[in-house]
Length: 497
Image 1 (cartoon, rainbow, N blue to C red):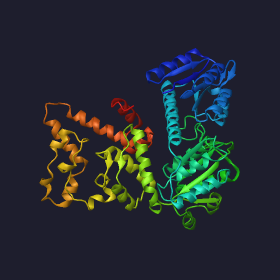
Image 2: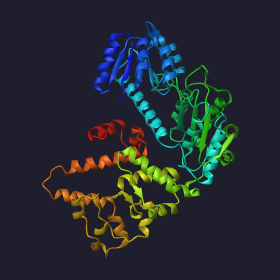
Image 3: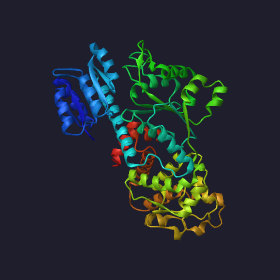
Image 4: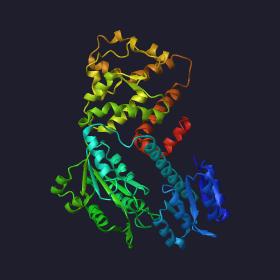
């Protein structure tokens, strides 16, 4: 990881932060003035996070913020300030600061803030790498070619766009493509799912809040509209936005001004809004759940994404692409898929669309026993098991990827010939393999069976979760139902770095 740069002319502040970050195993580097920071930026790569005081001899932290943001728009910058400098801190947010740290500060809170900034920086790096390595979008079907042509026509426009389509069809990919090929490409792209955030927090997420605006608001925070200034704000699942917030959104779209929660001064922002929904907004308007004036304000250009079942000819290409992508993320050899397995996928309805196919490919990369994926390896929802013989793991199906102890411990297929079909399906899953492996280990003199199998299970589970979230640890932890610190600790303990 790149170091955290600390810029302050006060030696005691530098010393305290350096030692605190060292205890947290976070590398750091200190500077006493703005000039040295700018010289270092000319000679080497930028930091992971920049923490800077405002008032220093020979240069202002606000000037440094402007110059750093010009070179590294996505770099989180934390501004340190005394309480008397609050006005300057407010100005820092206008310049794109990630957060401000009032002096004197609580050291644990300062470290936690820096950790949040590091996580944000790493998320941006993962997203940038994914965008650089992979094609933006794939599709040879006529319906997708129409979408590509529409993106091309809109490439030099700042017009508001409404993207419609079923969940998982790739609406955010289209929004990112519209941003990347627009005049705002050098500005930030900020996405927010309005359906995923509780109603009482959504207003603060969108518009930010002032210090003391509500219980727990210990510092001023910029909302997504401020973070996206000069760039694009993607509002996903706009149809689920609470009715009272729709009024505030309409105001911002009309004149570009808004108020932070608890604020009394209007904030000006220059943002292109791209909205998306899987719902029928016209019907939502008729039902009184969505403002008609907001609908017309958002619905300037409508772009409909086809469902995957409407572009089945793209399934083979997408499947191979996702298998390659998943293998890169997990650091393993890419698996191939047989024509027979592709034929089964081509018949599947994919209610979750492209996202479901992508997750399925991650699952196959982890769970398929051989390098060539056959129909029997496909997940149960595809329905292959309903037409194939029910006998599980017969001797001829054993391959080198199954350990010898597991092969010996598995029951012979003949033992199942007289069992009901539904029972065979029940006992032929991964649980059976786990039980068999446990039985094989328990038959030895080992006394670490629990730790051994738990570590293997947790490793594969975390691998799968990180693959499903494109390496985003916070999202992976949320999907697994564990804490952020827990997944970080597990990754370190299991040697998954």
